[in-house]
Image 1 (cartoon, one colour):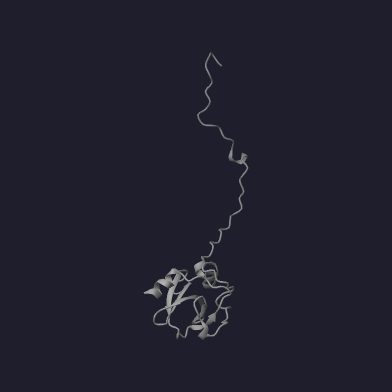
Image 2: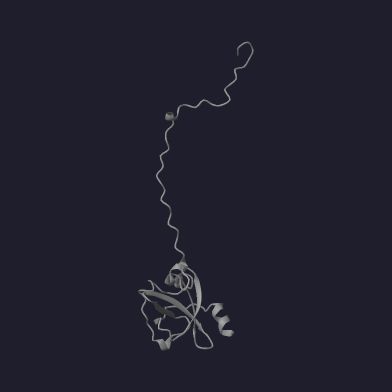
Length: 145
């Protein structure tokens, strides 16, 4: 104290020059790849969302039953040009068309329910998985109409 007065500290702190601080070195973080939607892969959708015992992709699936034995719960194997596709046969319309449940066709990365003519040249065969899922309410709703 000088003559009974207090020394007043400056209003802003006095910082040392910038070089006195240790620089923070950070490794660039690679952006995480967004997980692929299940709906973007037809076979993965059948396996994970619909509970079918099926592995691989639509190109590797092979028919294991004749056309005449296809029934609800079987997988319909399709070919659209050079693109392979697989959907679940969920039921039949009153006119005999197949009611299918799948994804990634006709709209990319979207779940779909399609009525398919059994005489379609796009159908290359049928695969009977080891276990069959319970039919969805969608198929039973369409059949009852």
